[in-house]
Every structure is written in structure tokens, then in C-alpha cells.
Length: 433
Image 1: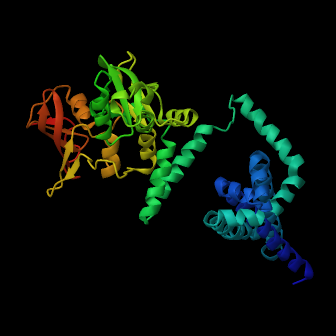
Image 2 (image 1 turned 180 degrees about the vertical axis):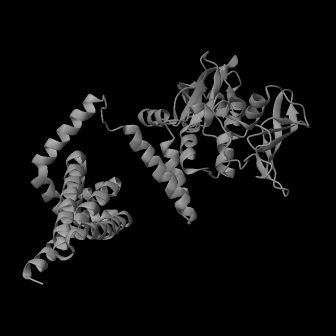
């Protein structure tokens, strides 16, 4: 074999290496974690900064890598055909096609792309500088190709653009994947918290409010001593004050302001002016999202608000703690009353208070009951059954059986809830006994 053969063989190996470089770079730089690169850049990593710059001009990056990969693959095929024709004549074309297909597939495509997929961040950082050089060298060609492609898109009425919602969905998917794949309970809880943060803009305050029936309120017409007694026997630091009607809220008593007023009066309860212990009431509409309300709490530096419907009637109260509990889970302190309203039974069922919210139930038991049209378990039964049930009646909705155990007038107060086994699930969404 003459020296030309070895030169041609070395050239073929070099072209395969270049093909692997372009293929691996394309996979690594498209699969790299944007969040990870952003963090590294903020920490002063120069290669991460270069990766982010390359990704900002994705059209030039992809054009360069595809152009380089296509060019070296064509050259390697032509070179292999030329070499094998010398040895096998016309049959060398067939041998070159088969041989180069195997070599390119294994060593220039599958191998580098597989490694890039399993180690995208590390591979992208390693290849950032040579890829940047290639982009600079081929920029005139890729610019021309990009303009041609844009012209073709324009002819067919296609306008490529980046959709911000796609990035949000990608983040949601990453959080859900993190939550599902983590075995450690703490990691799963972090995933649940991240998902809850993403959902703040989708949840309305009416879904987490404390209903007015469960709100401790004070009648302003009571004597001062009686009002102070009610405040002291309450586990809350803020209590709405009403006059004439519970819908007519005139203020909110704060225990700290009440203590200041009592101190000013020298401990003489008869001299206490309740108005000096009250704050202005803050009313919010039921359509407010948790994200907007959280920002409003921060701006106003307040922790307590009252939700009203479109007619101005009081629906319930929303506190900063309620929103934080949507993110981190239940928060209890030394004054909280430990009443969850969910009592598991030995037969696998649950005795649940009707006022327990669907969101709390889904979060505590990992169920998937819908809560778009109602917020409580009792509301679910009323909405889906389209009637006021009697004690003893049983309904099946969403693969869960609901048995009415107790009522107070027309209000469902106690329910036995039983998840159905998988083999019987889906037999009927509205079975009644």
C-alpha cells in the first residue's frame, strides 16, 4: 500500500471525528439545562456564558452544526468510495456505502449523541469554545442559509417564534418529573412546593378562603368587657368586627392594638375604646388569584383580608398564612386547633367533614378530585348530584363513593368517603343508592 492510502485513511478518520463533533455538539447544546447554565454564568463560569451566548443565536448555532455535519459526511462518503474503488473496482461503491453507513451511524451519530444526552451540561461546557470558533468561521454561509429558510417560511405563511408558554410548560414538566422520580420524601416535598408555586396564578382566593361560617367575628355593639373576653378566648390575633349585620364589617380588631389600648387606659376595661384597637377592613374580590393576593399582602404589609362576592356580601377571610400553606403545606403553631376534618377508618374509608376543601383533600390523600365548580366536599356532592341528598344516600363520583352520614338542615356536615378499587372504577359516575 502506498503512502496515499494511509493519508486517505487518516483523512477518513479525521472526517468521522469531525462528524462526531458536530453531531455531539448539536445534541449537547440543545439538551443542556438553561437553568444550570444560567446559575454557572452567575457564578463566573466563562464557558457557561459562552454556552448561553451560543443558545441565544440558536439559528446560527444549528445552521453551523448541520452544515458542518452534512459537509463532512458527504466528504467522508466520497473519500471512502474513491479509496475502495481502487481495490474493488465498481463494487467499491457498494462496499463504501455499506461501510460508511455503519461507521457514521455508530461512531459519528449514535455514540456521540448518546454521550451528549447522558452528560449534556458537561459536554456542552467542554465543546463551547470549538463550537464558537466554528460558528464564527461558517457565519457567512449560515447567514445566507438562514435567510433562504426564512424566505421559504414566508412563502408558506409560517412565522417561527418562541412561545413563552412553552417555557412555562417545560418548567412545569421538569418539576413534576423531579417530584415523581425522587425517592427521598424531602425531595418529593420540595417538588410539591415548586409545583404549588407555579399554580399560584391559577388558583383563586375563593378556593382557599375560610368560609364566613367558620370565621370568628365580634359584634361591635357588645360591651367592651365582653368584646375583650371574646378576643382573649379566641385563637386568632385578628377578628372582624360587625355592626347590625355580619355583612356590615366596620373594622378588624388586632390583639396588639387592643393591648396598647388597655395599657393606655391603665388596665381599666370600662375606659377601653374598641375603635382604637381596630384596623380598617380590607376587602378583596373573589376573582383574585393567589399570586396577585400574595403580592398585595407584600405591598400593603398586611396579613388579613376579607373576600366579598359581586354583590358585596362577605364570603370569608383570606390570610397570608393560607397562601403560604398552599405552598409549604399545613402550618401549625401553639394556638392552632388541630382539627383536620379527615379521619381514616380501618376499612380504608374516611369520615370527612363537609366543609373540608377539595384542595386539602387532594393534597392530603393524593387524590385527583376536580375543584373548578366547587371548593368543598359537600359542594362536590351537591353540584354533581344536582339535589340535596338525605342521610344514608350514597353517590359515586370520579371513582370515589360518598355516603351521607349527617346533615344540619340542608347542609351536608359529615360524609363517609371510600375510594373504589381499580377493578370497579369507572363503572358509573353517578351511581345512587
